[in-house]
Image (cartoon, rainbow, N blue to C red; front, side, top):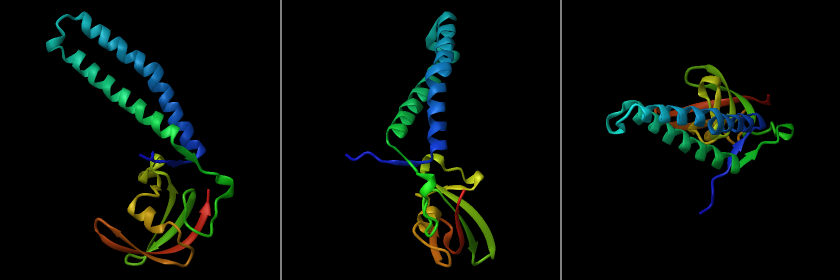
Length: 159
């Protein structure tokens, strides 16, 4: 089975590494302490503090494994040599919604860095995937859960 590659910026990779460092160090120690304190309270079969700590421990260990895989399989984008003639990962694209005459700007990123609130959309999202490979002046029809949206690509830059 081929492992999935994660396209990511150097900044995004550093954030993942920092999160992993925090989870492996301070967060693991904090959970271990909570489990120890909960055990000291006596019968763990009806101890909600113990159950909560064990559940959080399981979540953290799962997240650690997920981060390790993402870091291991990451492909860092060379931001110096981004081609701005076509929409791709690492580019910022200004588009116009042809139905509502609204302009929006998105930075296309890998799924690990996606943050729609910060105008960063994944290359695997419907809009990101629909814009990939297109150039300034292209009109693109993209199927989204709400229907089909038509965009005109106005500008492609790197930030």
